[in-house]
Image 1 (cartoon, one colour):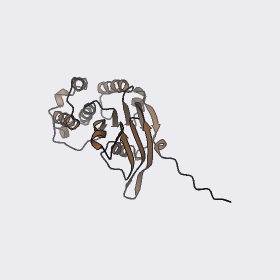
Image 2 (cartoon, one colour):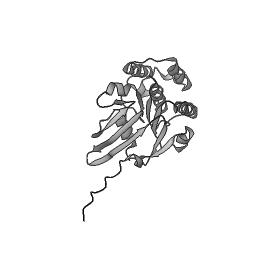
Image 3 (cartoon, one colour):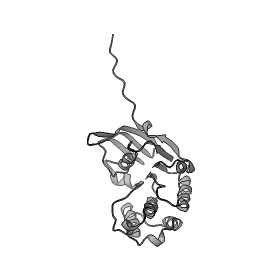
Image 4 (cartoon, helix red, strand yellow):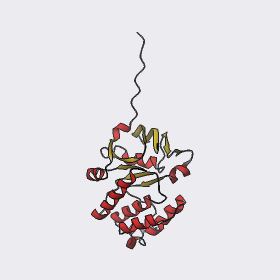
Amino acid sequence: MLLRFQDVSKTFGYRKVLDRMSHAFGHGLYALHGPNGVGKSTLLSILAGIQEPDAGEIEIAGHNLRRTPLAAKAALSYVPDECPIYPFMTGRELLEFVARAKGASIDPDIEALVDSFALEPHLDSRYGQMSLGTQKKTLLAAAWIGRPTVMLMDEPSNGLDLATREVLMTRLRYMRERTLVLISTHDAEFAHGIGAQVLPFSELHAPAVPPPQVAA
């Protein structure tokens, strides 16, 4: 299994957002489906190691995210819907930062992806001054650095022009045979276009434990 999580729970204040979420994934494309506020983005953030769960265990490509976080995070990439950090970095600096963090480089595949996203003219702009679409393209380009085996993407098609959207869909379809791509999206056309298996978020909840039987 490329991604396994067991009994992941998270509470904010008095609101329990995730309650004993469990699942295991091999390679393929999966789209989480559910209403706004149900916890899809929170789960992806926890699986990526951005937020800490209150309880539960997570394994990325066989590495426990709590006990061996560096090895686990080296095997994954994460594309949030919005990225408020590092607003003063240029796009180029952000890509180089991700490459250093992963012990990788900006290889020809990443350069080709930057070209196909028409991103090169914007890489010397500060991230915080980019349009939302250009910010998303920068994060998507960074997602392929280091050739991850697990890719987590929150609303990956948000803000993309049609040409970039088609490039992304084509690339994701190609990844399905050797990588796990888990996305959260309200874009049903996008999910269908990449051939993702739609997974209702409610199916990730662990089944309730039946009450003990009382002897007659």
